[in-house]
Each structure stands twice: as structure tokens, then as C-alpha cells.
Length: 327
Ligand code: UDP
Image (cartoon, rainbow, N blue to C red; front, top):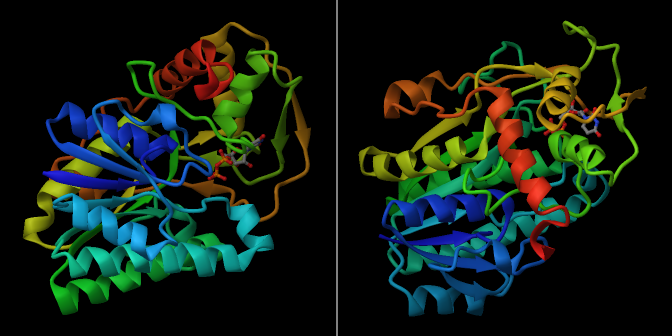
């Protein structure tokens, strides 16, 4: 298949592109390089630099390449920023997605994978969170993904576009080849920030609150290895002929912030000083996914479920690329 990967120069998109190529698929990456990195795009992929806001550029990609399926990662992704700049999310994320969908449909594409989010579940009533959970987006970012999920529902009904919406919890780790990993500026995520302390790029890690109702008072999150996430995309793509689907994707296991820091200490051998600071607004105490549905329906099984392996792969990437793709 010829697969268009939007955002394929980003963290998750580039690793999905790598896995797709490994499995023999042809990949066209479309990315504006605002947050992505040219060097992250696998050399075997065709790279088109362009912006989804530019409808003519999107059309040109579909005119030029016989695209069989789209995997849509390109997006603004910062929850906090979306609370300050809601139009960037409710506007651009949605209209860019619509541009992509209109051209995909116009060119007869019938397979679409959406990178969605756990930020749909701001007030979960059950833990772990399954697909029956009530959707309450936690921010304009989450809302933008919810709107895209709803748009996909209508694309399926009206045009027969088969889609999968994959709602990720905390993507983490790096490609086991050590070639691709996380390189965000600014970096907001816990594991890369903790590893920056081990690299001497940060004095200490600040724990955002230790008075949550959890086993050690710090927030519990579900860290899923980015390669396991990538495999879920590939399985979902292959299942689309049997209908559209939505899955929550996590390890099903939660780790506290303190457990993550301790694992990083063990893996790096660095003392990693930590200090407790105030809570970060909007952080729920516990977010853990139930991935029972994708396991049952597609036989998805995480290959790297333990936190230590996730941190080892992340450390290998950061240690060998202390300045990310610039190295
Ligand atoms: N966190 C923290 N210090 C940091 C960054 C994150 O204590 O410097 C906590 C954050 O409050 C959350 C967890 O680590 O409970 C994971 O945060 P991250 O931003 O990686 O992912 P999120 O859960 O927000 O998607």
C-alpha cells in the first residue's frame, strides 16, 4: 500500500513510518517541519514538505501519489497551550484535518487512521478507561480530536471511508534501533525531562504535586511504548476492511511520577535530584487505559510493556542524541 503519513517527521509519526517501511509498505510523509524534524523521516520514505492548511498542496500530494490509506498525526498537541490559544486547536487542528479529509475522499481514499487522545476523558467514572467511557474533553486540544472523530463518523456513513481512531495515553520510549525518539521544544513530557537531568541539561526534576489520592501521592499515568503504538496502527489499518473502529491504547498498567523517576535513576545510574512543586492545573490523579478491546479484536499485544524497557530505549536515544536530531 501507499500510505500518506501526515506529521511523519514528528515523534510518533516518524516511528510509525519506520515500522510501516519495515513491514514492506510505501510511505509518503507530509509535514510542515514546524515541530517535526527532516532527519526523523526514514530515508526510504518520500518526503513532501507542506502544510495541511494549504489545500492546493494537499491536493497535489493526492494527485501525485496513488494514496491507498492516510495516517493523520500532524497536529498541535499541547494541552496547556490549547487552554491559552483555543482557536489554534479548535480552528487549525480541525480545518487542517478537514482539508486532508476532503482531498482524501475526493481522491477515492477509503482508509484513514486518526491519532486521537486520552484527553477525551477528563472525568473518567471507571478506571481503567475503556471505549464506553463518557467523552468529556479536557481541553480545546482534546475537543479538536473529538470533533475529528465525529467528522470521521460522517465520512464513513456518507462516503464509506473506513477509519480507526486510536486514543493514546502516554506515548514513551524510542525506536529500539536508537534512530528515532522524542525531540520536542519545549519538552513538556515527564520521561524526557527526567532524562535531561541525567544528561546534565536540567538541575532537577520538579514533581507536579504529591498530594494526590494515589499510592505515593503522585499522579499515575499509563506509559505505552511508541513501537507498540505503531504496531497498533498497522493492525488497525489491516482491519479496516471489516469496518471502522475506535480503540483506547495504553499498557493497562499505571506508574506514578515517583516510580518513573526511580526507574530512570536505575537505568541511568544518575541520582536525578527531584523536588516536589505545586500541582499542574488540569492533571487528573490517575489515567490508565483499558486496551482489552484492541487485544480482543485485533490480537494486539504490547511487546515492551515494562517501564524499565521503555526507559532504557528512551535513554539510549537521549544519551546518543543529547540535542535530538541536531546530533
Ligand atoms: N510531570 C511532573 N513533572 C514534569 C513533567 C510531568 O511531575 O516535569 C507529571 C505530570 O504532572 C503528569 C505526569 O508527570 O502527572 C505525566 O506528564 P506528561 O506531561 O508526560 O504527560 P500527560 O499525562 O500530561 O499527558
